[in-house]
Length: 357
Image (cartoon, rainbow, N blue to C red; front, side, top):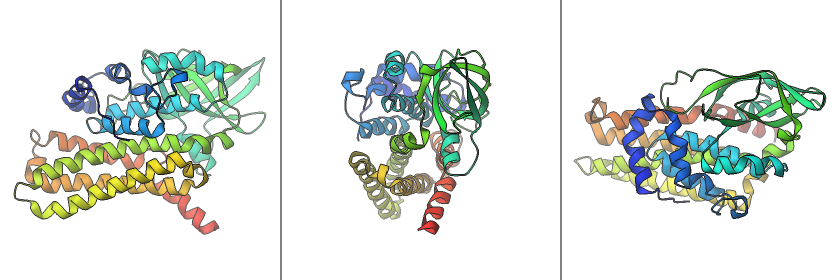
């Protein structure tokens, strides 16, 4: 799962992390740099234009980026998730048309499946509907929060309630489809250079060859492990960096923190191993609760890691200049629990499952 970034990319991310967090550097710079370093190809079969490996390697790529910038890792997560959806689709023609530009970073990929995940868990209704009309689909609805909506061009995977069948399907909607409106970027507390906005569909006509799957109920459990594992990559990278920072500062008269740091390092290493094993054995398809527990566990590790970094850095972390990178990681860590499916949603599903057992 360990990936080493090219030096020019890691240097740029390190120098740009503050600007990306505060929105001072345009998001349009991120994806081309990530793609040119080959990160979008990791875990994609060579026959599909990728560099081989599996989704565990793709998680490692997200984690490596998250060590430097969660804004950039958030974009890579959305982009790589969309690629994963195409890889799991029976629509080979759609994959053949879209994948080359996605792998090169010429077009962005975005995941907007939070609504359908909540819907299938009984937490909220689907917000997008599609009805058949003269050999096409007419799509209406709104998605309030989507990342990697690059203004130069994007594809977004959106779930829609089929008006005729009543069953959810997954659609590939593109930036230039008539009837699509992208909002201004959301006013986020952090990670402002992540092309995160809302989408509204009004009478959007979509050819049926843009259907990723007609059967989201059976398709989603197969792709959810990859989708959530790539999210976990953000937690892994951020936690690892905060732990390293804590360890570097604990030598300066704060050695009492050593046992806590080593325990957290071991916990993170164990969680990473469990994530890789579950992905490669397909255990998370059969037992999604194990993946939910890991996502919750990793969120806790992130919280503990930034807390240890604060304790190790002391008052220095609270100064605007010397503490700028810590303050960014603190804000980034605040996002980890709310990524859909959020920690509250996962705990709700786990509690319901235990009650039903």
